[in-house]
Amino acid sequence: MIPNVEKKAMTVEIPSSEHIRAVRGSALKQARKAAGLSAERLAQFVNDRTVGSDLTRHAIYSYEQGKVLLSREVGHRIATALQLHPGQLLLGDPEYAPPAPGSSQSASDALETLREDATVSGGGVDVGLRVELVMGAQRLLPVAEVLLRLLQKNKLGRVEIAGYLDVFHLLLEDTLPLTRSNAFLEIQAFGDAPGNEHPFALAAAVSRLHGLADATLKRLIAPDHESPVSLYEYCETQTQALEKLTQTIRGEIDACNTRLPGVSADAD
Image 1 (tube, rainbow, N blue to C red):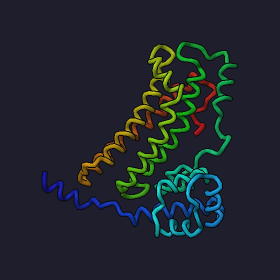
Image 2: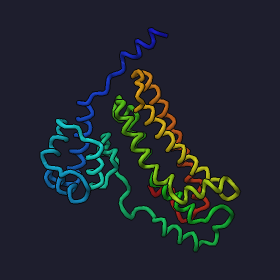
Image 3: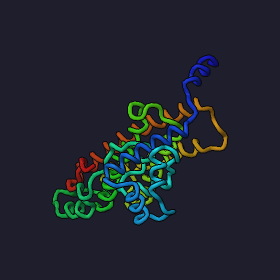
Image 4: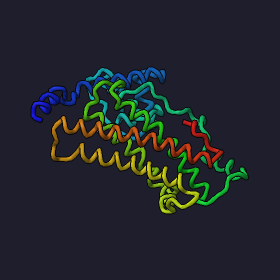
């Protein structure tokens, strides 16, 4: 056992702050150029649209050149201003683009379609709550999938522990609003009674996704430091669990949509 641990430990690198600065800086530069903004214009853009300390063009250049680490706080502000997911800057995935505004059917339009469709029938909770849950899950799913892509070795090479920390922190933030929504809570309370089986299963999968992110974060920031080997093994296990959960969520969305003809599973 000991020789194997020693051999494996040799392949584990301590997370490099220089590497993280470079990855985030490169992603920021690509995102800024894709938006057609100068560093000065981007700084002004962020200052006008978000709350926080004033950004300057010098700060933008320092982030892009990897001289200063793009913090989670500033990354979130820039992502908000540019209408990006924070993971695109904090983890370096400028290829991912969220759906354009208006490209998917709104929850209100979907609900109206359902109420006009005479084929919608059966038990379960109010159809509006089911629509709200499905639409929320459809917004969440591409976010979870792009973060999963960032964890896969063919996307970024070795993922540093800090990268795992960022991914699961973002997942926790993204899943929290849905798990606190009225639709989610009422569907969970109704249970898996006839007519509510798939919405209930979808809510349960979203709940497991939220729990996965929460548990991973707590272990990664625990005061009792584990060996790098142990943490990497744990993170890889959690990544596999994340992949299965995204597949489950997509399957339950599809199952729900067979009874919700006004909502498309391909909206993401």
